[in-house]
Length: 256
Image (cartoon, rainbow, N blue to C red; front, top):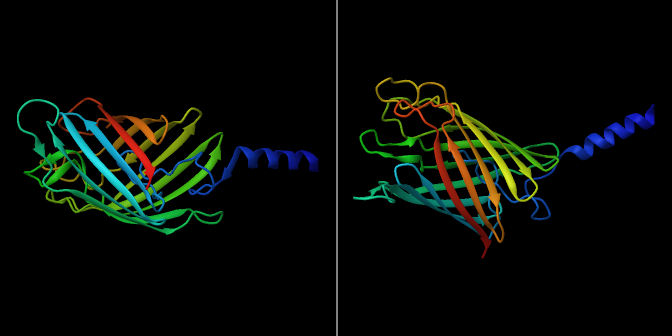
């Protein structure tokens, strides 16, 4: 009987066990965000990540992130709509900025915890309401926990307070998500933004109260390159569109 119990414990430990976000090898690279929502992951010191996201309405958003220290990361963003198309480009009004500090490292006893600020929203900027189609996170805190389940499994939950509140919706928001790694450099990403800060005003809010559900398939090709295929607003929460958005993001991660 004791042998059976020990065998079950041993098998369970090898199928599902905690491992830190900073592993000793590069089998599980740092994931600093899911799709729009941050994780508690942060780039290592001396690492940079450049990315380009292409979204509907001919939109392009560029990004560059740098690991200033092992627990501190900074990012800048810039882009606009109609970049791919004809006529003038509808540039974002300012450069987006993010600063993230990892205040608790992941361990056997505790999940990782990060706090930060991000002024960059997604889906194009609406000048009349001084907001992005999908609001920037503003001030946020996020908790992440990683497990081994036939590959990496990361669980994430966080809260944020956006500074985009011209629509009079100032609620604190909550978001959750997960990432699951597979052989061949494939990852399945999913997130749900409850959008409590985008459902109050029928005339000014963009959401319909269902929250924003996004998913993506990320393929880490080789040499730090990755391609992510994004499916946005699966719950069709937008008032002005009935379809699911499709986006592509290309990223390159490298040490200095």
